[in-house]
Amino acid sequence: TFCDDIAAAITKLVAANSSGIYHLAGASWHSAYEIGQLVADVFGFDGSNVVGKTLEEFSAMSKWAPRAKYSWVSIKKFTAEFGETFHDLRTNLQVMKTQMEGT
Image (cartoon, rainbow, N blue to C red; front, side, top):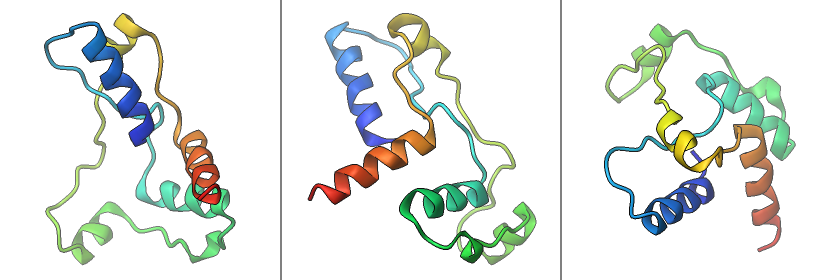
């Protein structure tokens, strides 16, 4: 989830004096492999260096706890109250690239 989207959402929540639980997340869901492919594409890296692994293979080589096959949260509550404010990963990566080029 892009921090700019989270900051904008928190600003809306605070301004509306909202309470309760709101899930905030990007508008698209991707596997780790797909994220690697998108990063390579947007930033101009060689996508052939991104290697796909099954969840079992990834978990076996990981130092971290096992990962869920599908892990996402619903942003319906926030969207219903404030409108859609989250962007898909490709859009966020493009914004990030532009921000990095400006520094």
